[in-house]
Figure 1 (cartoon, rainbow, N blue to C red):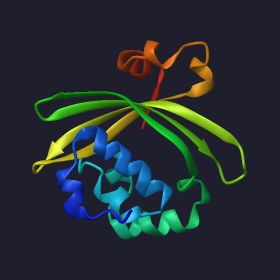
Figure 2: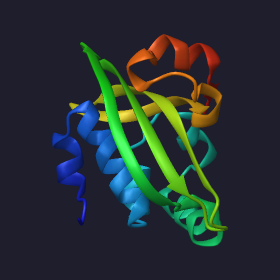
Figure 3: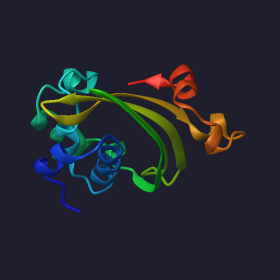
Figure 4: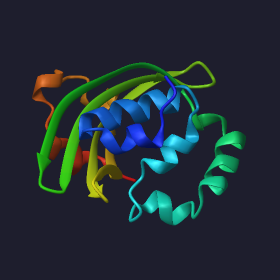
Length: 145
């Protein structure tokens, strides 16, 4: 799927997360860059899209193979949202891994944008089923980026 900036402005929070996963898998890095909120740490680290595109071309871990992405929960309140989801990936070296993430989104000029995320590796929560995973648990245990 070719993701456009117009489509980006029409996405609901959970749909934005799925679109970001699709864009990551198909190496649509302009879309990824545009989906970040202007106040995100990512945008502080990469001041321009071209700077990020250069990084993405040289860093092999930027586009892993996405094996599965499951949205578990979407919580929207006014101009902020949280999306809890589970991702399984295969890295460039063939290693399989995954994580739970709570993505925090903010509305920017009428469109949802990714502000930050809290990730916890799947193996840290392997004794729990997905229905027992909560946003609060991931935020408390996770690493924010």
